[in-house]
Image (cartoon, rainbow, N blue to C red; front, side):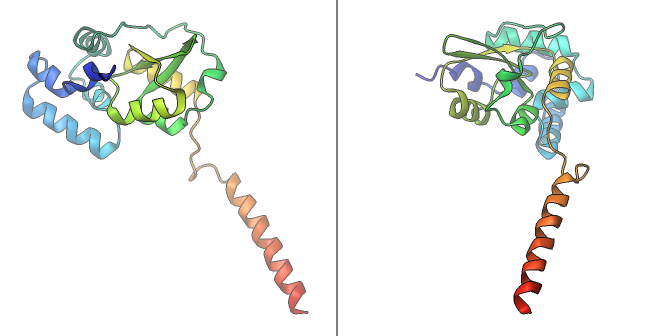
Length: 177
């Protein structure tokens, strides 16, 4: 039996519709918006203002049997982020919280998807435990702690290639003589 089955049994959009928190048409729009933006459905829900961060966290905690972990004032050890791809953490809105024996714990905005579970088990093993946290707090932690290289604004990598190209050109000119 898959220990993460409860997260995958019913998608969050179905839960929110079933609870009467959003109409099906609006949920479909938000699902589509999340896919187009390559962001979690929960992020689209929060950005739309359909639910507050606390209401979303309460719903996820109740339906998926996940404890809530407030992140305000939480101290994050840099070592927890090692071995985890920054773009994966940002894309899935997930924050590593701690290591207890062989179990790694994470705070998530919404129940982990199969894709996230696969990525985390590949990086950390199968002993994973999830807490739900409020979206704005997850974003704050990721913004403050996990840097993603922005190749359009960070041009330092270009200097490396430019200097390498100059060395190659020098070598070619030297060989022609």
